[in-house]
Image (cartoon, rainbow, N blue to C red):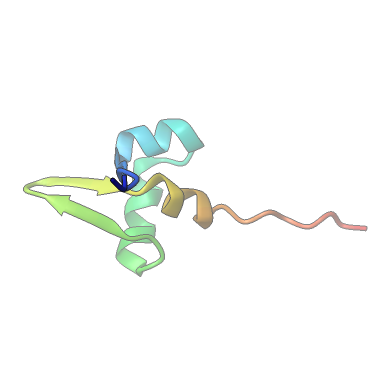
Length: 62
C-alpha cells in the first residue's frame, strides 16, 4: 500500500505571521502572479513551500 504526502495549506494571516510579510504584500504577489493562491469558497490558501520559495537569499556584499 502506498501513501501519498498530504498537501498542507495556510491562510494569508498564517503565512504573514510565519514569514513577517504583511498580508497586503502577499496579496500583491498573488496579483502579480509571483505567488500561487488556492481558493476554497471565499477563502484564499497558500502552499507554505510556495511562500518559502518566494524568499530569496541576498548574497553577501563581498
